[in-house]
Figure 1: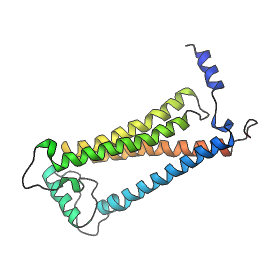
Figure 2 (figure 1 turned 180 degrees about the vertical axis):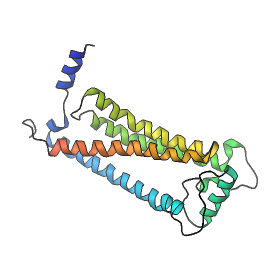
Figure 3 (figure 1 turned 30 degrees about the vertical axis):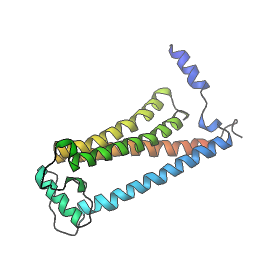
Figure 4 (figure 1 turned 120 degrees about the vertical axis):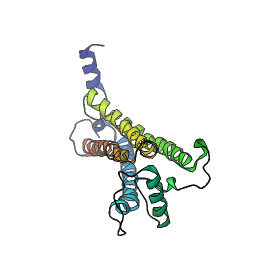
Length: 205
């Protein structure tokens, strides 16, 4: 397909600012609902994980370079105190009778956590991707905005497996992973609202 045909298709593609009022209302409430859910998730991470991990009143050393065995004991202590732990979490409690790898509590917990987050986060960005399709951007920019959140989700979930089974330093992958899909979500949400409600056009009713 020639560049001219692509440009014509992009020019004729419907934009959010030309949507009828009911469609704008639907898109707006979807964005606001998911924004509240994302804010709640962020609050849970801050209160349950970040604050206890980095700002605990109890004397705890930095755990980024600890071995798996030390990290497991730290996680067990954190669970006893009712705290979250970004580096190991409650899943890594010490076990007296070691089951097989596939039946271990650690593996089962991460597997459940992964598939729940894959379904939940990906559904959010499938919906946001559909909204992104109608932003007033070029095809390449919209394509990147559709793909990047899924890359961030994959990095974030991979960080959980890597930090438990390879090295706890992979904890830091949560930052670029979560930051990537969080930034794209915020950008698309703000841009969509601006295009629907603050951009003047002659087609919207």
